[in-house]
Each structure stands twice: as structure tokens, then as C-alpha cells.
Length: 526
Ligand code: FAD
Ligand code: SIN
Image 1: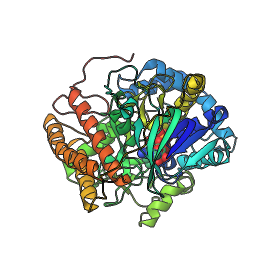
Image 2: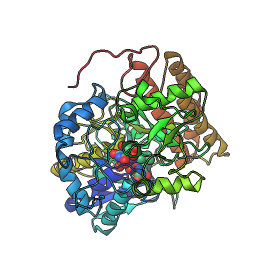
Image 3: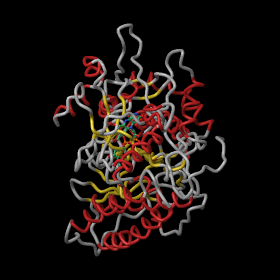
Image 4: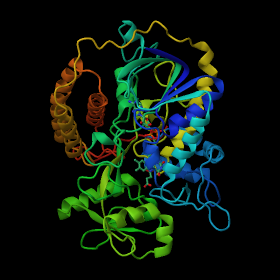
């Protein structure tokens, strides 16, 4: 079965939805999600979105904070562009129905997070992402040019490869014609063709054992792009959020927003001692890589399973008013944050690298754009500054939309694409073949490719990954397509790229720390 659109958008997070709303004025749009439309990393975002609004803040300060966090690998022109376009995009979000908290005087109630020199985070209580997700989704559902295809799992991007041509990674003329997608309800695989495709599939958190990301974050977009021979970079820079709630066995781990440290909460060991001042003069508000590594080190020194976040000295009423969801969640497991310390551990949270794009969201494949967490735009460098990712998603969705609208008349639907062929395949006999491989993958990544790495750990990880890669490819060849099997295959592809890029980086920088190369090589921001 074939469907045809002008624009195909894969992903209903902030990037995908804001792109879709813009291009929908210029053609027929399909927006795909493998789950229900509300499920995304966007929906879980707590702290908010960074943007310069009032003095004493300035673009210059936001730019410098981003460059400092990025540890020499940000592209300065991209940082400048994102920071200066932020206010326009915030206005648009508000026009689309997003409400940001204000103070009694009517000004925005700006929060502060690690690595920021000023209060500049616009937020909606402690569930900003949900506010954005709901307001954009409402607009998507109302738009007559947008068809929302929920429970449609994108399996692979379609390129010349599917027309029988040999395609190589550095070839300049690879084109994307759409994607194959599994309709999870009907179990039918459809061929979705489009003049342009926007890839907005989000992050990779579930490649790791402990993550703040919802189950949808299995790196599908990066894996699909990689298989389509698209260029990818910086995957070694996986950000671990320092403070996820310690609740063994819970997936995803509940996030305790960094904004709570901006509000005055303090990290302590289980003995009740502050420790962050030993690692950085910014103490609890140092950039995330530093805080996560410090916690990791304290846990290794003490042998404890978690450290504490102490909010008990803060004003009870204000604390509950600013962080109602965190209060409610902790209360539900017997922790009253106004009286008790919160047990926290680092968890895989965000991938800074991904599909390389230019300043207009164009990838190395023609007719394929990317935005949001799946992409690597040059904004984050070796470490993302807190609350810069929602901003990046909305700025690049806008730019990619403008570019796609400009280019759309150049492209025709590639009607000769063949339908998916699954002859000779059958359902895997046992789900355990898939679930066990996934658990093994997560253990390998958490134990060997986590916050602190070494050459030996990376080699071990690659050797073990090779075994589950071969077993899974074999299973995939024989099996009828299912979301779980595709997710496992994608997560293995992503793990492979992370390990390879981590092995290639012969230094420690930003989020990538290798004890065998503790020093940085000299490079500067472009
Ligand atoms: P997502 O919002 O993750 O959307 C991805 C979409 O793609 C989903 O609809 C998914 O179902 C779909 N998809 C994936 N694979 C497929 C497939 N194979 N087929 C079809 N559909 C597919 N950032 C900030 O800036 N500020 C914050 O305060 C903040 N807090 C966060 C808190 C948490 C707990 C988490 C997990 C992240 C947080 N982040 C925050 C990061 C930020 O939320 C994400 O980077 C951002 O929302 C990513 O948006 P996106 O549109 O790229 O992807
Ligand atoms: C948080 O609220 O701490 C998460 C912010 C982010 O990931 O940018």
C-alpha cells in the first residue's frame, strides 16, 4: 500500500510538530509517531526553555554560557543564530497556546540551571514539556492539511538503495523518497512517499540501563539515517542528568529538575556532607558533565548507591508551588521533600550528537531534513547547556520548514519505489530472544560506555556488542517486522556508533571522559 504527501514528518515531539505546523500552509503533511501522539521526550521536559528576555541578561551571556558548556566543540555561528532567534520562537510558542509562568508583576518567572550565568529559563511549573506537547498537538489535530498517523512505526528511510542501486556513505547524490512504516494496529507495512522528509525521532536514552527518557527513545531516527548512509557525528557525547530519583527497577527514572538546584537545593553525600565545591567553584550549579562525574566519583569512593538532594532549608510553600509534580511524585513514595532528603543518581538523558545538519536543517541526504534531539546542528558541542534542547528543536524546525518550503517545487514523488517485501519471514518464536538482548545491550552500555570510560571498557563493549549484533541481524532477516525487534536493532546500531566514536576520540572533553586520555587536545570553537 502506498500513501503520498508533500511533506513527511517522522515524530510528534516539539521538533516534528512545530515543523509540521509551518509547512502545512504549503502542502499536504503526514506526521508519524510510533506510539500515541502525546508520547515523546518533549512531553517529559521539566525545567523549561532557555531564552534571553530581560536585562541584565544578554545574547552575549547566553552565547558564552553555551560555548563554555560545549567545551570547545560548539559552532559559534550556530550558537549565535539560535540564541538570537530564540525570542521570536518563544512568541510563536505562546501564540500556539503555550503558557509560561509569570510573576505578580507580569514578568516571566525565570529559572536558573547549571552552567547558566543568569536566570533565563522560561517554564510552566515543573512540567514545561507537557504544556508544549499539549498545545502544539491541539493545533496539529485542528489543521486540515495535516494527517496524524499515530501507532505508525517508521522502519527505514527510502533511498536509491530501495530501487536497487548501490549507495555509499560519502556519495553526494543520495536522495530520500519517504519511509516504510508499520501500521501497528493493522500490522500492514505501508510505503509513505513524500517530496521532502523531516526526521524528528528524538533521543536514545533506552540504549542505557538507567534513563530519564520514555520508552520511545530508542534512537530509531539515528539508526535509520545511519543505515541510509547519512552523515552522523558526536555520538560519544551522551549527557547523563545528575539527578534522577533513585528508585531501583523503575523505567524511566523520574527526573528531579536542575531548576530545583537553581532554586537552592544542595547535593550531599549519604553522610550529609556537601561535596560539589571540591569539584567546581560553581558547586551544584556547574555544568552537567561536571556534576554527573562528581556524583559518580563520590559513589565510587563511598560505595553508596545514591547521593542526596537537600531542599529542606527552602521555603516550603514556594518549593511546592514551583515544583508541584516533584513534590507529588516524591510524596507518592514516602518522601516529603520539605522534610526529607531526595535520593538521586545520574541517568542517561540526552545525546548531543546525531544526524549532521546545516543551519537550515539539511542533512547530507537530499530531500531529508532533521531537527531536535536526533540532529547534530553544532549548538551543543561536547556538552549541552541545560534547557537549550527545546530551544534548538524549535529554532531548527522553523529554519528547516522555511528551507523545505523553498525547495519543495524541485521535487517529485518517486512513484516507482517498490513496496516492502517480507516474503519468507515468520514471527519470532519467543519474545525473550528480543527482551534479553535489549537488557544485555543496556548493561553493556551502562557498565562500559557510561560517565567514565576507558580503552579497555570500550573494547569490551564493542566485543560484546558484536555478538548481540550478529544474533539480532540474523533474527531480523528471518522475522516478520515488529516494533520491539526494530527498536532492538536500532538501539544496537546506535550503541555501535557511540562506541566507535568514543574509541576514535583520543582525549577527554565535555561529556566524554576516558581515563586513558585524561587531557583535552587543543581546539577552539569555530
Ligand atoms: P521527542 O520529543 O522525543 O519526539 C520524538 C518523536 O518521534 C516521538 O513522537 C516518538 O514517538 C517518535 N518516534 C521515534 N521513533 C519513531 C519511529 N521509528 N517511528 C515513528 N515515530 C517515531 N530539554 C530542555 O530544553 N529543557 C528541559 O527542561 C528538558 N527536560 C527534560 C526532561 C526529561 C525527563 C527528558 C527525557 C528530556 C528533557 N529535555 C529537556 C530534553 C528535551 O525534552 C528533548 O531533547 C526534546 O524534547 C526532543 O524533542 P524532539 O522533538 O527532538 O523529540
Ligand atoms: C531539567 O529540568 O533539569 C532538564 C533540563 C534539560 O534537560 O535541559
